[in-house]
Amino acid sequence: MNYFDVIIVGAGLSGIGAGAHLRMMCPDKSFTILEGRESMGGTWDLFRYPGVRSDSDMYTLGYRFRPWKDPEAIADGPAILKYIHETSHEYDLDKKIRYSHRVKDASWSSDDERWTVEAETPSGAEVFTCSFLYLCTGYYKYEAGYTPDWPHFDRYKGTVVHPQKWPENLDYSGKKVLVIGSGATAVTLVPAMSDSAEHVTMLQRSPTYIVSRPARDKLANFLNAALPAKAAYGISRWKNVLFQQFFYSVSKKRPEFMKRLIAKGVKKEVGEDFDMRHFTPDYDPWDQRLCLVPDSDLFEALKKGRVSIVTDEIEEFTETGVMLKSGESLDADIVVTATGLVLKIMSGLDLHVDGSDVDLSEKFTYKGMMYSDIPNIASAFGYTNNSWTLKCDLTSEFVCRLINHMDENGYKSCTPRLNDPEVERVPVLDFNSGYVLRALDELPSQGSKMPWKLHQNYIKDVSMIRYGKLEDGAMEFR
Image (cartoon, rainbow, N blue to C red):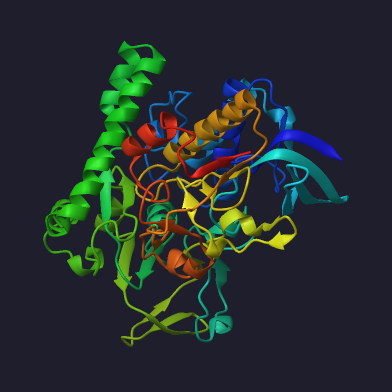
């Protein structure tokens, strides 16, 4: 049986970051990274659809400890994957990764003060043990995306593609393409496919707030030329953190003002004559995540006539396309179902503590990374209102602080305990996106008070997670 001080599950952006933090902050600890797929990169290796890119800037999506040096602030998928690979190589993590190890079960024993982790491999089950289990598995089901159960979907005779399973040699040149969806994937795919498709139609049931920003950050590139890389990166990172936090705060405090501001920006792009109902959601900004388009690419494609947007619901599929509830029909050679993800916390891992099954929906999150009454485990789960990696970096720092604190004091376990009767149960995600609502019953809760309450605020979290007390009355050390 293989023992490690720490087992990291997942070799994506957060998992490689976790390994680098262990190298820097816990250099004497043994660890391995178990990756279910055959290559590293997570999202940025899995998604191969046209135009795949970040939906936030790389100065905040990148690691705090490793500057992003490319001139493009909004980076494409291959550039992000290259960054992950380079980070792994720089911190000598390649040899730590065990590919095709899909973790299915983890059991904690208080007597042994260890986790027993079972992974499926091509040659059969393999068992590992560790003192601390760090889950960097992302937030969605990798095997398949979400596809609604549309009436007569099987009647359609054309090609159907989900962005999560994009065929390597799909030829859409000169074809009529129908992209169903209005989220980040759809607004990325549509302009990218319009370059060679005959026409691309984006069919949305409801609109999304869309904002444009330059793909290149002029200030960041100026700083990169004038200052050492680390200093330039730090300034650009904080500038973007503060701007995003300000934008989010104003959206929550003055939603009507922000609606008008976003609409004004869209009108400036598409012109006064464009039907603005396609860009006017019936919810407030940040009730769902906003979509970012670099250099106005979606709006430019609309103005060129290569793209159209239809806001309607599907009545049924036909042999040649879809019939809408309005009575309009849309024919397409290719249908792309950009209809979202299947939310899956811990990648569907079965957890047990001292022989009892763990039901995550009964648990509370501690600082957005650990769980009530589950010892020596943490999950990297990023922000919904800012770049994912900001919170994951802080989580890795906290895990390393926790491990070092336990070593210094002779502790073997750390368990968040909710002993405050005044803490009320609150949904862990204040978000009404479809993929969240579909899985809400499976998720743990946050609490109404600290340290069980989620900030969704990087500045507050830096204070609490990077510098806050470890022995805070809620964490039980033994």
